[in-house]
Length: 286
Image 1 (tube, rainbow, N blue to C red):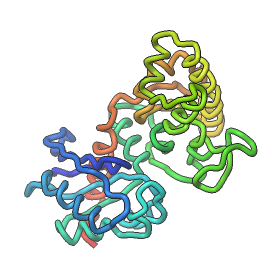
Image 2: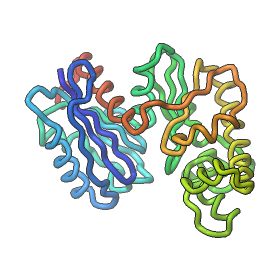
Image 3: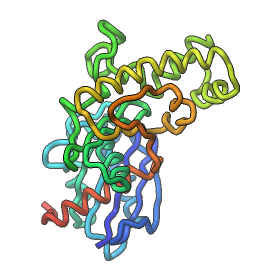
Image 4: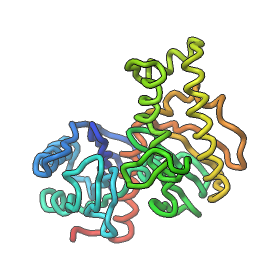
């Protein structure tokens, strides 16, 4: 049974076809349309058309946003507003006559990474434009309240978050937050990749910025460790690709702190695993 897994990012949509053993056969990508739903859907059709073959039995999709209980439609999607209150799953099912299952991208990344591990109690954080958060408890994935650690208050009366609350971890620990902090401290634009290189080269200001960032990162890890008591906390997303910079700043916790190993492949693999599970449980085209 072959499946397609698609990871909808804020800039790019990445998709892969997987064989019955979960091995990637072919991959493709296309830009993410954020404002026009019809263009977004047509882009998805084009991407799936590059991946489909007669043996594909279902399509899994992971993306940012609030996914409704039917796992076909969305609530609010801050980063891709054209998806708000839309049923993407039904559009794709009508076009390809295949079951579709949509889940949050943090869950997808977690399921992809967890497929390589034995632990059944795992928290995963993804650090990108925002902070994605999902956990496995006894092998079952959970997302959202009370497990959304992207919106834990790290600072009382802190900066206002897009979610409406103040002091959220996302405001201080996302890649965007680190970029803003670096630009403020350097007093000119400096990309995060440049900041990391400066740190590696011993730049004192870069070290000061990473120290400041890591103080709050450790505060978040401590909250998760105490609240969930997971076996392991996985740090992923584009920012944590610089694991060599961050690992020496992370304190000891009861949970093991490890870095994601699959990079940007985790989401699509996780999506394919999720739809495969749904198919095994009898999911069909609605």
